[in-house]
Image (cartoon, rainbow, N blue to C red; front, side):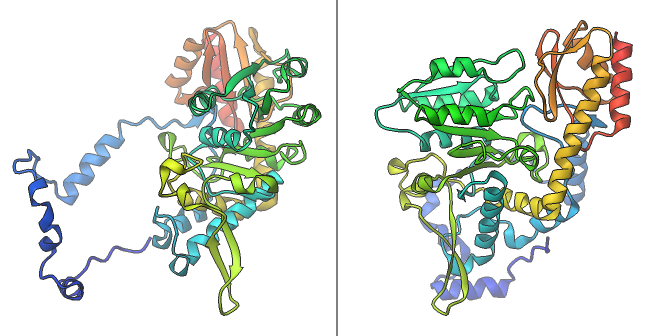
Length: 437
């Protein structure tokens, strides 16, 4: 990022002269009565003291040598080029690029992001973008709403945090949520789906892979949904799409997901990136921003915001969506990540996630008292039942500088593996589990 250059006294005088006032204070003359007279503020710190204080605070954070926790946020390797280019000052603005004549750079990056997400999902159009995977799923469901129908079938394999957000969204729309349970393999029950899918259902929501890491038979679900005349929405891990069938191939109308694995660090939970991609017929219902490619009056390539009503941004009471903030910088990081990795790189990351997860699962289940809860094929997460309490395992891992998986129950943990976990990391974890036994 380039250095910040403050205005000189000469610059300030010139700007004030243009607008016809003699001082900066004159700009705020009408706000005098709003000024607080007695504000009890501590003395400011110098740069050295401030750096020392921040460094001291940062040491309170625990940074583990290896991470086996996923459940919606994943520790992936981020190429240096992603942070380097994303940190350039040309991109560091959160304001919506309404004025295309001065926003061509950021508009083009959004257009490239949309193109890559469409390629990843096999869909016709994408937005850029929404807050996270949960809001993406909720907004995607609202896109599929139909008059005369008020029920959504929601797989129990979807992230429970996503469900809470969806319930908040749909409550105001008087939409009923009915759940479809999982079978013994950890997949969404096809038989239960068939029983509950009726004429009042306007959408079926499925996660791929699901919250427990199991790879769903998404194509079979799509065929059933289409036979019954309902809409189909999938919430996907974008890394998995480098190996699995795309939402389009599974018959989905809308694809959503959490884009954090695409070049964004864990960052204590945000900011993250929700993506939505859809079929052409939902173009007018798409939330967030859409950037189109065209030509200007001189025939040169140009980019503009398109197919979006102004109500989406400024007349909130008439907007069809609650999404307004610009997530373009997170989308930029995802664009840089996908461009840096390329098709082969993305596939390699996904392949390592699968192979390493299966390596660890095989090692764990070889231990006495450890077993897989679900028999279905999995991507990079899996649930292990053990005779040892989850709390004891998590505590033992913490002592050895390992961040264990997510506790699901007294004796169940959801473990996650990505390409960042080495064989040495996994073997060390197995030794810790042996000791805990």
